[in-house]
Image 1: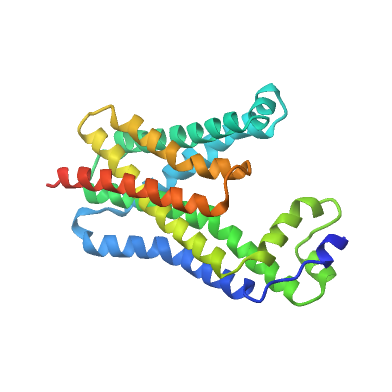
Image 2 (image 1 turned 60 degrees about the vertical axis):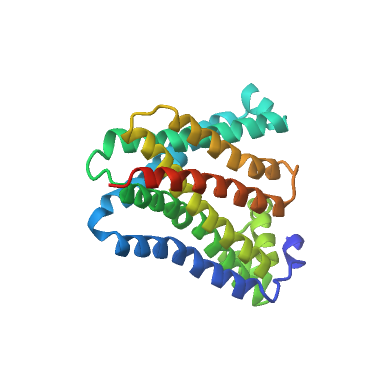
Length: 272
């Protein structure tokens, strides 16, 4: 497998990946500890757990099931979506917005009927965003770190054996090895900033949906869905090669600011 023999691990790959792993753990933990310590009397751990479970069920079970049928499986629908950038972006943003926000709405309205404080709404958002980091992104970063360490030792064949990469799996494994080799402090900063913005986004969207639930105002769920769709537009475009990587961070910062602005105003309205 000569394609792996030409890969060189960058000098900053291992330290930047190690720091990223630590920060990925620290972000949700610090969000939780700071909020919990400040509002211990008005928060319950069950809301944090509900946020985590709500995300896993809505985004990682139900949404992925639809993705398998509409994106992964070979059928007329998947061929149409994968063959059109506009269809791919529209499908991706709608699915993310509908599944996550409707899931959030269902849990907040029908399951979490006790302890409906605005502080618990924030805690729910921390659970939602935190589990996304710990269950989805952190394992990838740990894998990249392991790859970088093994390949930095100089014995490519030994590294491939330890990672169980064979001729049959080489093509699918190559992008991960290349990503680990190219990882640096700039990508570290980008990943950390992206996660901070995502945490604020999930907290903000939870507050928006929660406000609609406790005030019986139906318009706030569609608002959350549209805001979520807008946030995911550039990541979907990037997957199609239509926009550069840096533009995602600018776009994310813009829409996170919009969501947080709306959420803060609604949070203040729910005082008491």
